[in-house]
Amino acid sequence: MARQKNRGYQEFSSLYSTPTRTVRRWNMGGYIRLSREDLKRGSDDSNSVKNQRDLLRDFYQKHIDEFSDMTEYVDDGHTGTDAERESFQRLLADVMSGRITCVVVKDLSRFARNYSDAGSLIDNLFVQMGVRFISLAENVDSYRDPDSVNNIIVPITNVMNDNYCYQTSKKIRQVFDYKRRDGQYIGAFAPYGYVKDPKDKHRLIVDPDAAEVVKLIFTRFLQGGSKRAIALYLNEHGVPSPAAYKQMKGLPVSTHGSDDPMWGGRMIHSILTNPTYTGDLAQGRSRVKSYKVHQIETVPREEWVQVAGTHEAIIDYETFDKVQGLLKRDTRTSPKGREVHLFSGFLKCADCGRAVTRCVGKNDNVYYACSTYKNRSRTACTMHSIKHNRLEAAVLFAVQQQVHLAVSYSETIARINSAPVKKCQSRRVDDLISAKERELAKITRYKQSLYQDWKDGEITQQDYRDMKADYERQIIAINAVLENLSAERAELANGVNNEHPALVAFMKHQNIDKLTREILVELVDHIKVYENGNISVKFKFADELRRIVEYIELNTDNGNTAKAV
Image 1 (cartoon, rainbow, N blue to C red):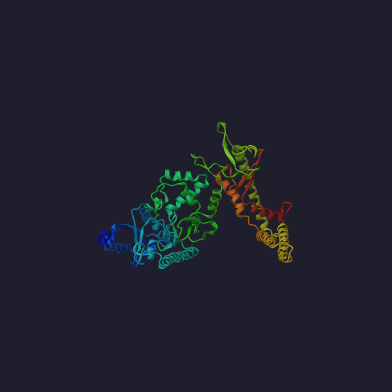
Image 2 (image 1 turned 135 degrees about the vertical axis):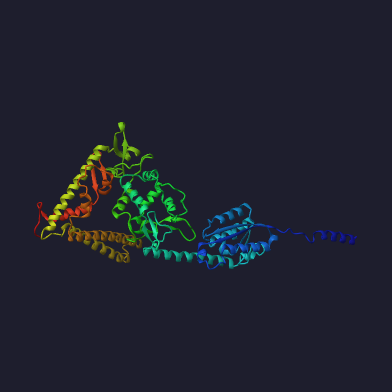
């Protein structure tokens, strides 16, 4: 009986003692990447696309029994720190869908140079999806040798790859920063209106044809044209857009938006705000957030790198400054409107301070009303209404009066300057400087005594810090006022010329008989509208004109030019 039991056991064990194992076949995704830096080096072909392709195909052929097929993914000219590579994202999508079950790369740096991205994919995503990962150079195979993935060489290599990119990015930024500060143009493409000098790619020279279009854009904007209207005008007159123009001329052009032959408001705005047209290089206006995050961000104007006089100007400083001032105003137009209205952006309510807007009543009568009253609340402010014709006539009269004063000031200054002796010392300025210096000395003493008050226990440490910071802010503000007053005193000491820019700005409009937007932009800061329909005009050059009046008063006696001190 025992023999029979043993025999039965032997028969059972013979069936299951050597179980068969099914060999798993993988869908291989071979990933290839070559960065721009690799392309520039040129002499080393070890990382070339061809070399990587040959290595991956050779590996596939030698292990063909493990793979059912092979799909190739190539990113040529893409940095490894950017995870948004087209083929790389296609590979990840195929991994997520289950189409690819094994990822093979030449080495870890080809897969990614971002330490966190590489670690997250290899240690987390691929493990969760059951995806095999192979790196040939580092002998990493997550299926045949799972420990190889956790080998210390993998994170060290990823960190080294990441650090390599950081150091490269840092060096490139330093070189670019030096070139910017040295006045060298480092952009890939010259701004519209310029071309790169064939003898020096870091220098800009004027493109005459495009420069005329740039001048036209600035002129029409100052004449009251909206950005949209200017774009429509250029399109209707067959003027090619910057990208289309460069393509026609065979000039290098960016691939982004290069197929758009039409002008748009954004293009016009970009040209109107670019200081490069004044002959000054303004670079570093945008930047990549970091070597890992390849998003473009706008740089604050105070951080731009600006170098004056690096190339020929297309637009003079005065015109450019006028345009910048106008862009800050609310100069929106109706959807079908092309021209900015005469007073757009200039009118303010004298009580609430908000804009006074243009309205059209019955019989197309144009009037202006406070935007708070009209659009927000009729209890928060009153209407402050004034008819367009009355407003235009009043502002024209105010400008004419200011022009007459400027001419009178110029003639008086000419007589003063022809006198043998001139007074140049202002008692008002001297008194203000003395008062501010006394105030500064007092605050400085208070600040110096704070420390002892803290040590004596009269104030807490937090009170000491707060009061010290407050005194320091006051000292900075007073020093700024003193600097302006000293500059004003120095200007008075040097005298005033009858061709002063503030006087010339008004005197060139001596024959003014009609108000235009150009004149408003040049001479007027803002216009206040009062509830009774009265207005007050705040002219530009107010400080300069005040000093001119003071200089005249110092050197005249009862309206006659002084001959002696």
